[in-house]
Amino acid sequence: MDTACSTQLVAIHLARAEIVLSTSPQALAQGVGLLGPAWSSRFASLGMLSALGRCHSFDRQGDGYARADGAACFLLAESQPTCDSPEFSVTATAVQSDGPSASLSAPNGSAQRRLIMLVQPRQTFLTPTVPVECHGTGTLLGDPIEIGAVASALCSSSLVIQVCCSSFKSQMGHLEATASGGGLLCAFVSALESNNTPSNA
Image 1 (cartoon, rainbow, N blue to C red):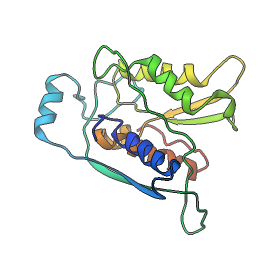
Image 2: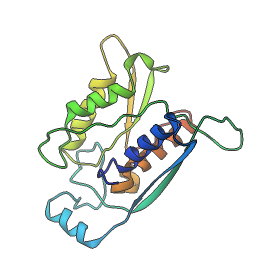
Image 3: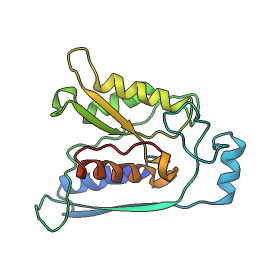
Image 4: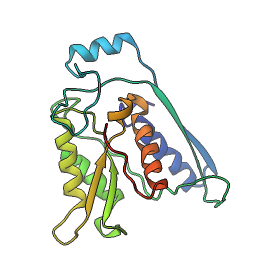
């Protein structure tokens, strides 16, 4: 499947649905992003790539993104606690259309806000600090829209929390088709390190 940057998270959503519906006790969700000169030339001609050669996520130097290749694979299974290796519980997933937006690099903030609130209601926070692994491609247009959506969805006047936003793209680059899988891996690492959110490079 191909849903651009969200591809691997959509695959995880569908894999989890198979398990919840008891269609299968286990499912693999794999994503692969490989660089190709044709797409690099096309994205460069559209002004999407960084002249500085890296993703400056949530930074005033943000001038586009840097392409990278990589792969990630997740095994989803019915809950079977074991001490052999770290395991994480995926408690909620959701998928929706981004709706109308100005361009590929200009996300729809209202759609992002609605999706976040579907899977993470405000009243479920257990700690005052909430780590959020963001898309954070490093564009002066897209990053502020995303931060605004996160703040609007998770913060309210009656709930005092600290939202710590990060994006692995500032360290690894944009993996495109498997970018969301890389972000999920970073969220798992953050959880293993007691919510120590990785800093942006």
